[in-house]
Amino acid sequence: MSETAKTNGELAHSLDVIIVGAGFGGLYALHRMRGMGLSARVLEQGDDIGGTWFWNRYPGARCDVESMQYSYSFSDEIAQEWEWKELYATQPEIHAYIKFVADKLKLRDGIQLNTKVTSAKFDEKTRRWTVTTEAGETFDARYCIMATGCLSVPLAPDIPGLKEFGGEVFMTSDWPKDGVNVAGKRVGLIGTGSSGIQITPRLAEKSAQLHVFQRTPNYSIPAQNRPLDSNYIDMWKKNYPERRKIARAARNNTMNSPGQRSGTEVTPEQFKAELESRWASGGIGFMYAFTDITTNRKVNEMTSNFVRDKIREIVKDPKKAAILAPSNYPIGAKRICVDTDYFDTFNRENVALHDIKADPIKTMSKDGVVLESGETVPLDILVLATGFDAMTGALNRIDIRGVGGKAMKEKWVDGPRTYFGLMVSGFPNMFIVAGPQSPSVFTNMVTSCEQHVDWISDTVKTLDESGKSLIDAEEKAEDAWVAHVSEIADRSLIIEGVNSWYTGANIPGKPRVITPYLGGAVLYMDKLNQATKNDFEGFRVD
Ligand code: NA7
Image 1 (cartoon, protein in one colour):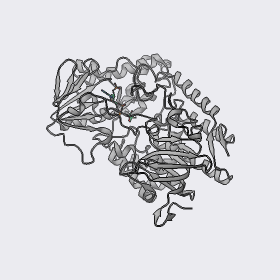
Image 2 (tube, rainbow, N blue to C red; image 1 turned 135 degrees about the horizontal axis):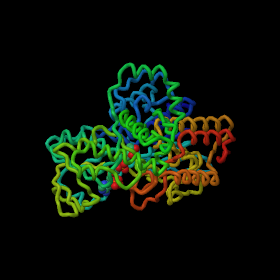
Image 3 (cartoon, helix red, strand yellow; image 1 turned 90 degrees about the vertical axis):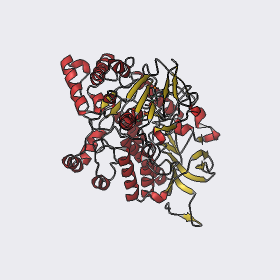
Image 4 (cartoon, rainbow, N blue to C red; image 1 turned 45 degrees about the horizontal axis):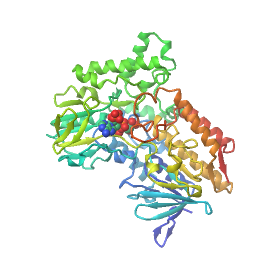
């Protein structure tokens, strides 16, 4: 059966596979399923494909994994044809790449845009999932693949009086397609995570006055971004298979020359020299200077101090520098940021920094932000870069019902429970791409999506070939995986002392548990491959 199978001239609603989400994971899943001769359809809530790289189109949005690596590896033809422009690609460039791939693989006719999935229900008798959309359309399929993304549900802050504000309000995660004209305007920015740090210099250079409202300072490493020269591109293109292999042998699926020594094995001078060199080459590789930056308190403190010193060096006003330098949590406990000129932007005369930990936002008024101290900061535009209901947000917003009508949201009331972040016991034939408790956001996401989609496709193929029609995670295996995820997290400093979306702590009331798997992509894939080889150990296949 092929996806083009139509009933009465309409696209079939009864399929082999339904895929939710048209980002990197969902698009590759469609390609693989079609390649296996299965009928498949992608349902996407946005009015274009691209997922994260469709929605987050704010000025300055850029990937913090190098562009030569942040791309699909399954097709050498695509890798050879596409030409990246900069070391770190911008959002428009990545979005263009995703559209190029979709066209090249002729995926468009298998994707239904403007289609928000509201529920997915499993029928034990027929062993089929019924998926319903906001518009009331239903689809049913043997398998359901949730490629709904890790950071796809934006969080609007609960600021009193927000509706009273007389100016305009924009979210970085749903930036107007035509852009926002900030020229000559007084702009406020709330949120100093990756999104806030990326948009700050861009707002500063165009607006009359920028007010950054910072609750928690972040550690950020310079990207040292640059246009790619043809020699560098050629070197990659000639050696892609080999280089991808090296990347896949790294714990984050990325080539960034991980250091082989503990930070305790070197002299203070060698330690500093290594960090200086990583700072000069830029990017997330900084965090891999030594093997134990996120596990050894002393090494972490020395690394944190290095970054604090850099911030104090860059930011000329000591008062601003003191506010911008994180002082009370370990580097890595919040997702490390990668920036272009972020700290230097605070040297501009038109940029003000407000420490809203010390003087919190009391309310919004018609004119702008009113602080607890009584000061009003007048604004024309307010930009919110306030983060996401990460990892579980998109899945929990769909009414997913498994065996016996059990709701996944109820099962996850104390935090996600999965087997390998791929399947949830009691929800047979439903797969998650880069789900909670898989390495996902700690890796090159494109590679992690490919690894998951490959596993799902191979599994479906194995089932079909052996005349089986059901796969589920065993509860005992799931419990063991959940325990393993948390045991690994306990060895890390990553969950310490700060509210982060890694643990759900950025949302009041959300259960505080580590959601990504911290054991690294290599250990993770070894374990998954081993279980698969052992006759789907921990899975029930029928
Ligand atoms: P993040 O990293 O979750 O950052 C959100 C920021 O918004 C952070 O600075 C928060 O401060 C701030 N925030 C959130 N709510 C409020 C309220 N109510 N008042 C003041 N400040 C607030 O989201 P990003 O979009 O920047 O990045 C997400 C990931 O995308 C990133 O890690 C990369 O992987 C790509 P807080 O720290 O909670 O004090």
